[in-house]
Image (cartoon, rainbow, N blue to C red; front, side, top):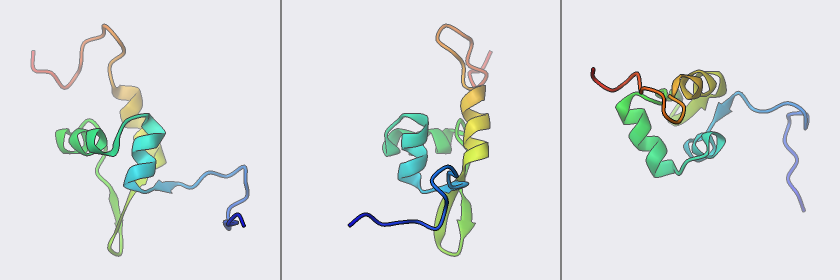
Length: 77
């Protein structure tokens, strides 16, 4: 039997787990961890002992990533 959440179907959660955050931007959790350490993805927020990634911050960091052939702003000149 499918589990029903409290959110309406048209409302996405604001906070995502590590696995969901990685999937949201289209990469593996291991690559996501590497990008968080490198500063190219945001750090999580803490809710008790849980780590949760803010979708809005993920969107902003993803938008700041260079496109194919563009200069990476995190590279040193």
